[in-house]
Length: 221
Image 1 (tube, helix red, strand yellow):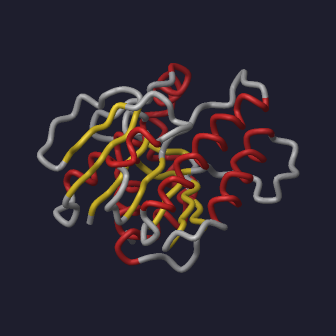
Image 2 (cartoon, rainbow, N blue to C red; image 1 turned 90 degrees about the vertical axis):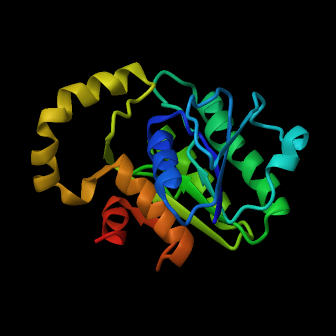
């Protein structure tokens, strides 16, 4: 399986990249991002590309893939709705439209978040925009589109978030994770489980397109 990965330097992206490189069934991993990952592996190819709204210059690096794991995203904290939509919806759709044309047999995976508003009419700005993005992707003629909605993600294997606020939050919550997992098993997952679950669905599909945190955990149960 050949995999295309966007957002490999983020916390979730680091975890998914790790699992792709460890998986013997993955032949090639092509990473697209604004900055290099710093990872070196025989399977790994990287294309540094700063303009995530336009891909004509690198289309040669975007074809021949079985699955795309799209993990780019920003926090909505302090952002106006227009700016958040331009990044969250705009970047995702720009990539998806290009990839759908170049790889019609591809499965496209989008990491959204627990609490996303599929109606696009709720009070939460970030949830509406995420819902808008999910709904648009689910209408696209890929071989398959899968939306992952994790809740609390525990970073493993030395992975850290690039967002300062999230890093501090994970430090505070780290001792409580076993308790959180016990009390709220359907709301806690790990970077490893997200990556392995994506690979499992890329191979075998899933019974539904939108997978909540509990569904993500159940894939490997």
